[in-house]
Amino acid sequence: MNDYMLLLKEHNLKVTPQRLGILTIVGNAGHISIEDLYTYIRKDFNSISLATLYKNINFMVEVNLLKEIKVPNHKSKYEIVKKEHSHMLCKKCYKLEDLELSLHSLVQDASKKSGYLFDDNTLVLSGICPHCQ
Amino acid sequence: MNDYMLLLKEHNLKVTPQRLGILTIVGNAGHISIEDLYTYIRKDFNSISLATLYKNINFMVEVNLLKEIKVPNHKSKYEIVKKEHSHMLCKKCYKLEDLELSLHSLVQDASKKSGYLFDDNTLVLSGICPHCQ
DNA sequence: GTATTTGCAAATGATTTGCAGTGCT
DNA sequence: AGCACTGCAAATCATTTGCAAATAC
Image (cartoon, rainbow over all chains, first blue to last red; front, side, top):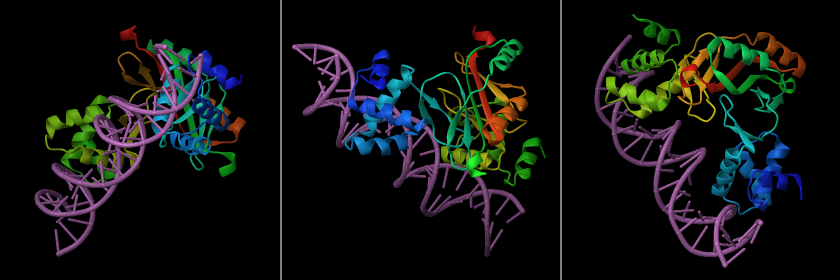
């Protein structure tokens, strides 16, 4: 019983080879678009259909196993849900990387000023990564 | 010569009634989806086509007159470009509001840690607005 | 054994493209 | 006259749906 089997069960999703394949690829990639995911997974399951891929992605997002990251000027990418964090986007190579930083006091501040009760945030910093500079 | 005429000329776009109409509606709404924009603009230009709307939106985004805001779990909204700012999203009424806050030191910090050179950022705080609480 | 999942094909929805007609400069 | 813009229709691209066969538990 590997990690991804457990992860599926914990989220009340049946374990299928296709689902394990999806999670393995997303896990290895860190962040991946539907398009790329389909390309890669076809190497393992050459008969998998796009419909199956979409259905599973949607299930996994619904049960909060995957998260969709909407990237400015690009297609969305998906990641396995983990501790809240922000992202850095390289505009040259389109790489997306995690960024740990504390928005806590900032969010608290915004809440006090606006009266909103916040329970989520998405921050993407865009620029050029060290490798592309 | 009103403000939106000027705005178009400054961005090297020809002035047409349709474009003025688009800018007026976006300006009044603050943030608006393509769908809603189309509904409203048809009241003024009942013959305007979706193709024209898309073409113009795309032009205006390209020349940095409009900005697309990708909203978690919803369709994108568009706003007229102005000083950099963040957004607050109400998950109940789907309202999107501007939020002024300084990410400067935070971005600088992230840059130092990661080696990225950042020149843009998008932050959306999601929660419940005062009115919907 | 029963309910769920898969893969295919078709349907839908969103956005883009090609092109003829129109209007501005 | 010449170039850009508009509106229509058709094309494309992304995503979803319906259904029969296969699979998970």
